[in-house]
Amino acid sequence: LKHRQWLEEQGVNVGEMIKARRDIHQHPEGGFKEYRTQEKLKGILRGFGIKEKDIKVCAQTGLVVDIRGTAKGSSNSKGEEAATVSSVALRADMDGLPIPENNPHLDYKSETDFAHLCGHDGHMVILLSAAQVIFNNRGMIPEEKLVRLLFQPAEEGPGGAKVMVEEGCLESIDEVYGFHNVPNFDEGDIRVCEGGFFAAVTIVRIKVKGQGGHGSAPHKLRDPITAAAMIHSALHTIKSRNLDSRKNIVFTICHFKSGSTFNVFPDEAFMEGTIRSYDAETLQKMKERIREVSQGVAKAHDCEAEVEIIDQYPATVNHPEQTKHVIRLAKKYFGESHFSQDELPMTAAEDFSFFLEKKPGCFFALGTMKMGKQLMTLHTSNYDYNDNLIASGAYFFTRIVE
Image (cartoon, rainbow, N blue to C red):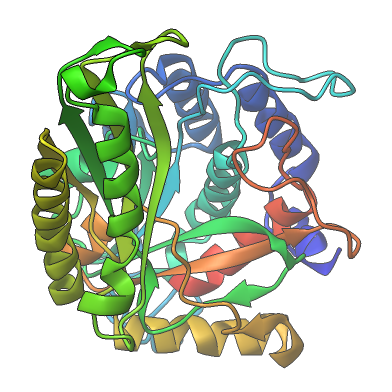
């Protein structure tokens, strides 16, 4: 409540921000297709008084919004000496997920086959709310500095952050900050750690090629199902037998398919999954062994294995000074009891990593568990963002810039 009251005092109508969040929730869009969302954001930003020239399209459906300081020289609008302020970028992701929503009780339930089941609708409105406070207080920012808002498309894939970086969204920026809501952390908690925060994610696809035939005569064919099953088992020994046990890595096969009927062997079997790691050397070793084991086991079963390995997102690695800054602010403004490093790092992945590869910065978690009861987890069909966190998230973003 105190964060909401503070925002209201700074000119933010939190009730209207909640309405905006729910409107965006009702009209989700996929990666690089966030055209309605983009127009909605533009309209709100213009309503704050931000000029059109400072609202630029980036990565097709994203936005880069600059709020420039107006304080003359080294003093702020109160005549006080201004601290050395970095040009800071704050980021929110925009896209929904291709999963139908199962929240019939919501009058703002998604109207499409996409849904905001990861909270990006909340992230955007948090950044909007922070933007209004920062814009209203631009007289406190030295005129040679700026705050840049990054509304980023396609976080869920294929990587809108990478495209934004390639298009120059971090030019003239010294530091970059972002966050994600986490429903299994308590409401209003800030969790952050130095170094690896989210894992790198690498996609693995394996096609096992044999020769099909009738189920009555397995001796006359080359069975890809058995070969694939043995490959699957062998791959899960790599971590325990080939990798340093002190290096954390997660390997999972989540998709396995072969054949179409009960009495005929197919020609092929297929499996795919992911590797998640914080350490580049360990990841490279894992990739090498996946190829070697897959091809070796397939050959032992008179089959062939085609292995495709795709590096999707690098690890999200927080920089030391910026992480210390976030920790200090979390303890100061949210209290020691609302700061933690428990359960970190996490093995999820985030394309915010592309920003952190280019500029120093920090990515943190904002807990959204409501009233001590766990919300449905991210990416589930009955997830919805906790609107209580709009004020808390916006408040914290403004403190980062302060």
